[in-house]
Amino acid sequence: MHIWKKRSKEDIKKRVFDGLKNNINFYDSNILGLPGSHLDRQVFHQNADFLSNAPFLSTLIHNPNHIGCHTLGKSESFFRGTQEIERELIEICAVDILNAAPQSCDGYVASGGTEANMQAIWIYRNFFKATYQANVDEIAIVCSADSHYSMAKAANVLGLSIYFVPVTESDRSVTQEHLNHTLEQLKAAGKKYVIAIANMMTTMFGSVDDPSRYTNALEAHQLPYKLHVDGAYGGFYWPFAHPNSPLSFANEKISSVTLDAHKMVQAPYGTGVFLIRKGLMQYANTQEASYVEGEDYTLIGSRSGANAVAVWMILSTYGPYGWREKVLVLKNRADQLEATINALNIPYFRSPESNILTMKSSHIAPEIARTFGLVPDNHNNPKWYKVVIMDHVTMEHLLPLESALHQAQGSLA
Ligand SMILES: Cc1ncc(COP(=O)(O)O)c(C=O)c1O
Image 1 (cartoon, protein in one colour):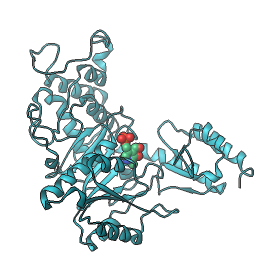
Image 2: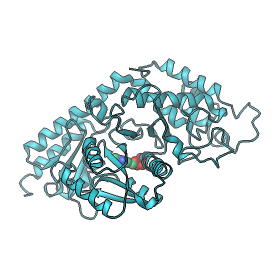
Image 3: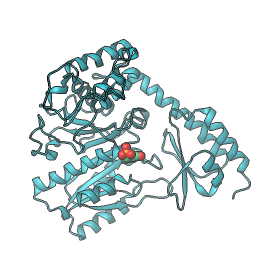
Image 4: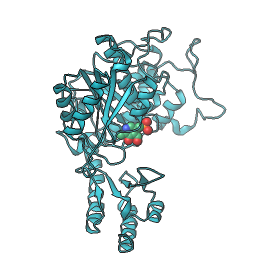
């Protein structure tokens, strides 16, 4: 491990309060030019006794603005104390979770997976424009049909074409044949540059793409490309279940990764993590942000420093070994559910070791789906229902589902 370690509560508290001390303090500092302040004191208690033991809530109340990207050198000096914690978090995610070389990645805490995916696509669109003088209509996004809808949203916002490669029904993978066909189609439509997306656990199936399938085909077709990994769901799970996965920065063909701490990490919403190899973030520089010290390289602009602190606190509480154990517990529960649905002959998909099980709707009574809050692939015409084994989905919650499935057997074909 490079810098990620398990820390005591006291250590975490000290680190966060030290960070806040190194920020400007809206209560005491004579800072007159910022359009921001601490949280409203009529509504949010500022002096409650418990706050001295509550580093996250204290950060929320102090309300540091982490505008910009803090791994590039210069940033707003007003909030340098908590920015330092965010820098450490980015390094933990890039190096200790995703096998990057130390100090080789930039990144920031985005509003979520959607923004982080869009940030990657925005950067690569600008990269192709700057490097190859590409027109926007010559750049295409290529991803599997199981990809998250944020890819379609990014294509829409950024004015790019998007090509969804079909996946096989049984193993949810993109075949070489389908991929070649898609690349031929897009070349025929005048596209010359590709922003490829590889999924590290898809939203509905937890399916995982083989990045070499994309890179081999793109290279064979002589299409310049950038490869982004969408680990919004799987980024804090898959690398622990599969330490040698090719979906990491050890794979030199991967340029950027999205992780979402507000899913598996149980951090507050607003904690997507965007990571990218050094040398690329600059393509998203908005020089017009001249009043921001260090300028802005992010889609979001102003954002809460408390979010970065929350993620750092959670990862530091567990440490890398504690995190591996957490993943193992979820995997074990998923193993148990899988054994039951196997015994009941319910057709399903599960990636190896994954904590999502997706069952064919033909074998799930709508009443069971409703009772247990199973999420369909399509609310109008469900073909699949998924169970996502999160922290709160304990065996006590899974057993009633298992017995309902048992009871329903026989009444459904
Ligand atoms: C694989 C994947 N990518 C992206 C996203 C988008 O994340 P968010 O809802 O945080 O914007 C999700 C959300 O479920 C996801 O599962």
